[in-house]
Length: 561
Image (tube, rainbow, N blue to C red; front, side):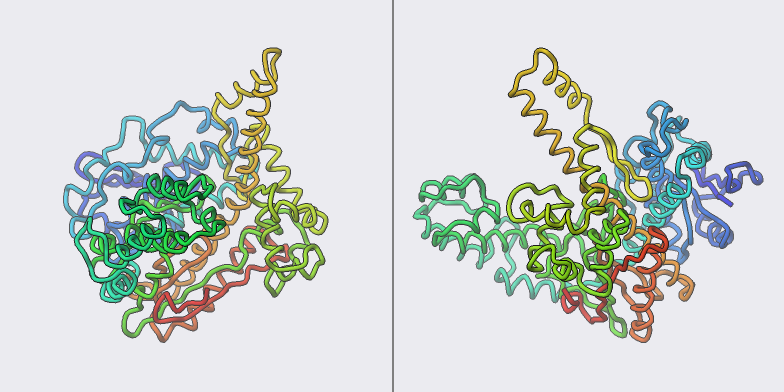
């Protein structure tokens, strides 16, 4: 059963529909203030809540101490189905652009604070456009999935994406435990005493002076890449940028202080005192995730840098008294996903019960683990130069099925064709100008220079599609992992999210849970079991393993790397 929630004048309308989208009773009007209680009364194993944007509706339920098991996030699902190659020709894909194709209301208006969850202002900006009808959109989505070439996979993808939206809302609501005093101490140890905004901390000023001396440039502003680049060149260094990898190739007394300055400046600007004041409240960092915010399906951050917390400040993430953090990350997730997608038994065996790169070495494809890692990354990201590019052919001889899969994806991209993930998320195709330039280059008026240009652009797009199929499928594995884990936790803890073990942080292939100390061992077991579930969901009985590194710690900084 679906319960579709939509905004109407004066409140909310809850419309019951069958699993097929047919009417299943009369719509029920619900006052705004009564919505959490309505959800609590109707939440049941067979119910799937349907709304336009989980990040706007679900916080109401969470703030009232409730939770839901399943939902359909129509906007996230629309984005998937609108582009899905398997649903090509569906009415949903051929319909004119509508409000469903534009930015979500949650991305256009300020998010409500918990204190304002029941204010009238909460729904400001949520009035739907004339062409937004959640019930009609659900029917269109159900029809697109049912009529697709692979309804089972698309249905699973939409369900996983919507489950991810619930996880993201719960993590933002619960917050990541954060000790502001520890963070302050870490900043002071690295940068010196706290200073007002706009003032350079003592340690940075000391390094800046050393840098000016090394470059004989008393007026140098190390915060300006352009100034630094000019100063380096005046010192006789051949350099095109101030990127770390390029600077590391140079030998000069200025390089060490410059790299240290860049590292500490990044800490100050990304996670310094300003970040602490803005993002940590009541001992919690409330990350704002954009589910599917990257075209491959990976998550992004709406604010706060949720997808990148540097190791320097992770010791500030401290479990509450009587609680623990369970930190888990998947080892070599993308290569293992590639092996399973391609049905490459040899690559799967290389990672069975051990480090996959060690297994590649044991296969005889390369001599060292570092070579194995470089070759694998080269295969997945399209390296043609350096050691990684040089070793890719050797990897292809050892694991032809896996390498053929990414090669075929790259060739499709070079032709301007879409590719898909395991469950059917589909890559975009180039803009019309891309195809027009290609046609001109190979017309009778084309020139060798034009042809070289379009070939270069084609190779770049091929590198994108090569990685899309792997990174996107890895994102689906991570969604399935979290969805399974969330279900396992909910079966044990039936109260408010924060009362029992709950997810508090996620980045690509790593999760952090906050759990009562007495349950930590059980939670760690569920994390591993959920990873096994994810493998079966995506790849059935194919013998690929997804080993985890799992730590039970008091602070995030103490977790295994």
